[in-house]
Image (cartoon, rainbow, N blue to C red; front, side, top):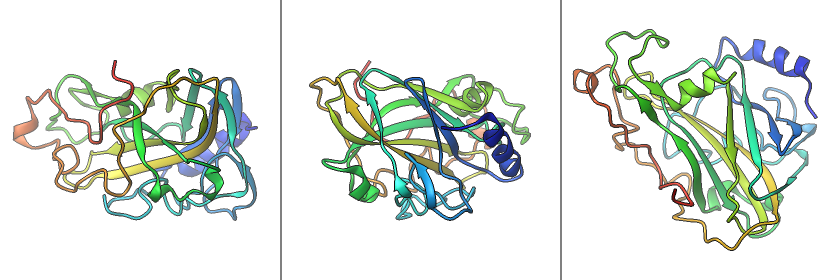
Length: 252
């Protein structure tokens, strides 16, 4: 379980850097996240390890699935939750970036997630928010003075948290849940912030999740949503942003 004091202290430490998910609320139960820069020994959490507040900057990074190193904690926990439940991920507050999409993926571990390697899993997307309104472009490089509203801006506005409903069609089983922020405020230099947690789904349905991708492999460095300059003249009036990755399952 997490405490408000823990979140506040960790947020102060992250303020001058970037960061990640500090804690989760899963169907009303609160869970601590992993604490980077500390030994994993004794950190009992549902979250996979992430070593630093720094982003991943290469789409082919072997740790793109669940951050660096993305390995298990000691001991590793798994949260049991019913399909259709709500999951809230809390990032360090305030999250420092407002330009870019938010994406949430899941992957069936086909067994115990604790023994699963994130790069080997098949990931499907359950939630996304890109350019919500306005235009991509801005001539002003001040991050909070933008013509468009982004998913990441909405995350910041909601106390640096993101709420997602697990699909009711999701079959029972053990899954990895992957939140990802893609910050594109630096021209042609994307910043990926993936975070993973382990879930056991109960009360599920009979849906077939997909399409799926692997990480790395799901993105290309030349994707127009990744290799992008939001300050370019061509984006000043551009109101269309193609969110990277597969479409959301189930389709709305």
